[in-house]
Image (cartoon, rainbow, N blue to C red; front, side):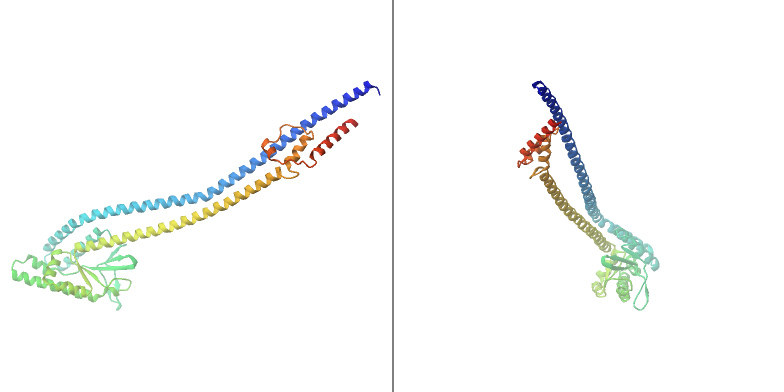
Amino acid sequence: MTLREQEVTLDKERRATTEKLELLERNRDALKQEFENLANKIFEQKSERFSQQTRTSLDTLLNPFRDQLQDFRKRVEDVYTSETRDRQALRSEIKSLQELNKQITEEASNLTRALKGDKKMQGNWGEVILERVLERSGLRKGIEYDTQGSYRDENNQLLRPDVVVHLPDSRNLVIDSKVSLIAYQQFATEEDETARAEALKQHVEAVRSHIRSLSEKDYSQLHGLHSPDFVFLFMPIEPAFVAAFQQDENLFAEAFERKIIVVTPSTLLATLRTVENIWRYERQSQNARLIADRAGAVYDKLRVFVEAMEKLGGQLHTAQGTYDNAMNTLTRGRGNLISQANRFVELGVRVKKELPKGILDQAEVDTDGGDDLGSARADDAIGDNQQE
């Protein structure tokens, strides 16, 4: 073979080798781009799925907790507003109590003068005054008190107390308004002093007689009625009460021994207002218990939330460990993926774009025979081309 022929052959082989190297370069770029796109796509899908799951889990945990807190705050504000309003109303009622008592006493005294000794009319009128006092007390009929109820004692005898006032813990107060005031009317209208003294004496005896008859009824033993040992005897006219108890100083002690408390519109109204306050504080206590129960429920929800957050933190820690292990497999140790993929480039594989520099910097280069292997494979490729 002549020198010219050898030059021509060498020139052909050189062009063929150049074309193959260009083909390898294009293939390396394409493989590199595909690998990078695939890695980015997988990472984006995993990140989006993890973010969606995390957002869903947090919404599931936080929404009930937020609702519980809003309900708890609303209840506390309602209780505070109600208590403030009740205190203001109580202050206003106390201011008007004295004027109201005076008005009731004057009306009762005028009405007594007009009754003209009619006992039936007296009884009805006394019940009307008692009803007005009950209405002014703030108690609710049918809830905190009842009128004309029917009860039977241990001898099956039917008794009808005028008013039964209910207290918390299923306790009751009995009010009777049937005291006779005929003698007092005579005392109030009589001009002769001797007749007035006799009428006053009869008035005291009428009150004493009613105290004795009332004590014999023993309302505390009635079935279905949990009454304390004493009963209120209502006298609708304040001056009648004052006249009787001033005339006989032992009358009050005798009534008390028989477990009878004699009251007038003013003293009964003050007592019933106290009962109304007891009911108000009882309702507030019930609200406080409801708030305490709700606070316990909120605390339990908070505990569940904290536990869930701890669990989520553990899961995030596990996910971080899995990510680190994957990155170690990708960039650490002999035969790591980055090192092997980069070896393709060294062997002449064409890629459109190289792997990110940050990943390449993290990857550990496998130097054990790597260069020799690359050189040997490159020489083999050239020898094959020459044979062709």
